[in-house]
Length: 301
Image (cartoon, rainbow, N blue to C red; front, side, top):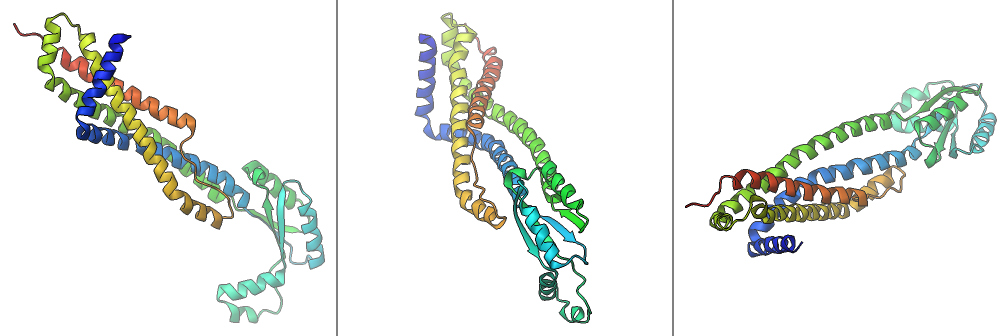
C-alpha cells in the first residue's frame, strides 16, 4: 500500500512540475470525452422533450357539415368530461371560414361561395401524462365512434419521426464513444511513451538494482489514471457549462411549443460512467504503452 501511495504521489509531482504540458494533454482528453457526453445529454433531453411535447399534441375532431353548432357544443362538453382530456376548444365553422379567408389569401374566391363548406372542429388537448401513442390512439377511436364525426386527425407523425432520429443518434453516440475512446487511448499511450523515453536512464538504474517491470510500470499506470480522471472531470465541467449557456434558449424554444421543459445536464449515473471511462481508458492506455516500451529497456553492462 505504501509503495502504491508513493507511486501516486510521485506521479502527481511529475505532472505538477510540467503544468502546461499536463494541461494541454488533459484538455485534449477532455474534448474527446466531452463530445460523446454532450451527445448523451442531447439524446436524453430530446427524449424528455418529446414526451413533454406530446402533451401539446392536439387531436383534431372534424364534425360532419350538417351537425348544428348546439350539438357541437354538447359534444365539446362531453369530451371535456374524459379523464384523459386536459382541454377542448370548439372552433365553429363560421370562425374557421373567417380565419381561412384571412390567412389563406383566397378571400375573393371564398366570397363567391353560397354556403360555408367547413365543419365545426374540436381541438382536444390530451393531458401530459396521456401523450403516449397508445393513449392518443384510444382518444382517436373514442371520437371516431361518434356518429357526428367525419374525421379524427392525431398529429403524432412528427413525434414518430423524431423518435426515429433519436434511434439514429443513439447509434452515433455508441460509434462516437468507441472512436473517441480509441483516441484517448492513443493520446495517453503516446504521452506515457514520451515520459518513458525521458526517464530511460532512471528505468535502467531501477532494473539494474532488481526492480521488476511491474514495479517500474506502476508510476506510469498512476500517471495514466490521473490523466484520464482529470480529463473526465474537465469534460464534465465543459458539458455543465454548455448546459448552463443553452438553458435559457432551450426554455424559450420549449415555451413556443407550450411546454415547461428545462434543459438537464448529466445525471449522476452518467457522471459516474464518464469518470469511470476516463479512469479505465487512462489505465489501459498507460498499461499498453508501458508494457510495450518497458520490455525494450534493459540495463546496459
